[in-house]
Length: 120
Length: 107
Image 1 (cartoon, rainbow over the protein chains, first blue to last red):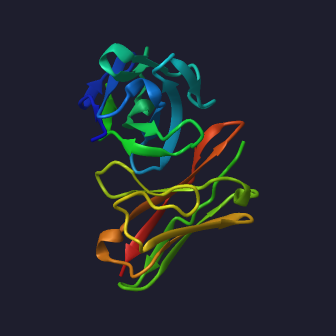
Image 2: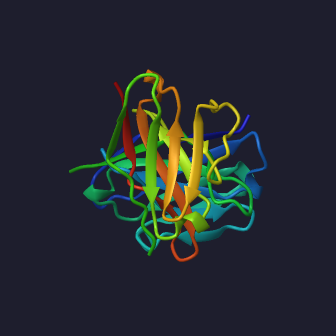
């Protein structure tokens, strides 16, 4: 069974750093892209970026380029999303999701989400 | 950039047919995918490549795509179909794009 299990909720102060994780199981982790999606409170889905764990090839949405860093450790089947200096506007739910296949562009499995709250 | 436009809300009577649209410039030339998100839950893929249903998704869910509009159709709507629905496409310039989402209410 394919599963993406994300790390737990975080409460941080502005200016702090943060790294959240997404662990894949039940499939070949290095063969599928993992994307990250933001959902701000009461708002819609926004694609942030995507990584191919096999070779760490990474693409970012222009809206998030330079604001976050996406990485992966294939030895432990885990992808990461990190911030070096959080802002209150980073408060949101963050989902990781597996991209199906090499020629398709949809997400067939999703993590349960990680709620990040940034408040002074 | 490429934008997808969805109605903020759609209402449907119990047992009737709901249609949720997703507008985009020549969207018929792209593959459109649809996700269902219930309150407090992660999104779930309900339609991929315009009209294909993943395993486990009821036949009541169907999709079409032509011209400037893609449509998600939910037949015989049930109370359990109440959710937010998002369309999504891939564009070569900005990669993955989501619509703003549509809240489906079953009356």
